[in-house]
Image 1 (cartoon, rainbow, N blue to C red):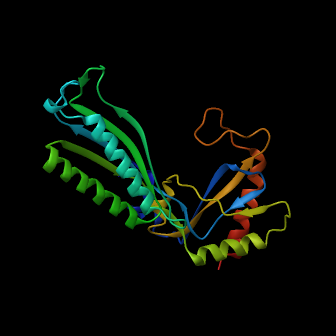
Image 2 (cartoon, rainbow, N blue to C red):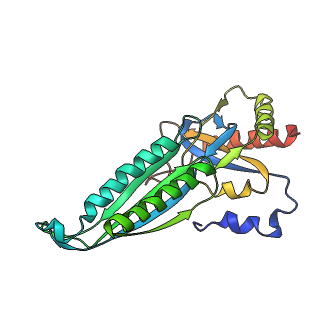
Image 3 (cartoon, rainbow, N blue to C red):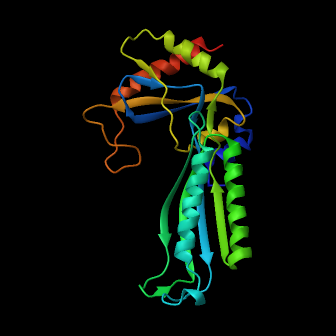
Amino acid sequence: PIPSGGLKCINTEIIDNIKSIFAFHVEPALPVGTISFAQGWVNAQSHSINLKFQGRGGHSARLHEADHLIAIASDFIRKAVEKAEKLSTSTLPSVLAFTDIKGGNSYNVLPDEVRLKGTFRNTETASSETFYQFIEEYQDMLKQTKNINMIYDIKSGAPPIIINQKVYSNLLNAFNNLERSDIQHAQFRSMGGDDFGWYLTRLQGALIRIGIRDKNHTVGLHQEGFNANDLAVPHAIEFLMNILIHWT
């Protein structure tokens, strides 16, 4: 799997006496005064994909003497995207994105290797298993029909973060008991992965997002210039206090 501190923690005695666990995450897509939690999936699982297509290099004028690996990689991209789109639904979406492709360095030479990188993100386990099967079948097809090697390496991150009905009801009760009228509830979901998903394989709990956007805080997560907003801290503290008070 993708390196993860959460995976290491859940396999130790650290969590033995913990009944519930919560993660608070700032969210610049939501305005200050917003607390987000939802029932069902709120974060996806991320899989890093690395592929190599290997065949015969040669002169670009003599395709019959070589393998057109860039065209083959392009065909794989098209069919993989189509597969991911079919696996995606409005309630359980999946996303596939290719982010890097390298092959060749001359206009008249066909490369003997093309490298491809991307990420597949899913919100339930069955879709990733089906997508893995698609890659295996494409690999077999290339070997049998074109004698081309497709080598792939997939690393999976933390499982999707899924909030069950009991936890959601408790969170909603805690929110409804807030005395402040300037805090709004949202149900924001993200196709990003999060280490916290490992904890929910052993414990009940939730990922809660705290809005931080205002005129001085507009930069997105993982972007240069990002800065958390101190004005959101009291909202997070008050909501956490209400969770502890009203949890059943």
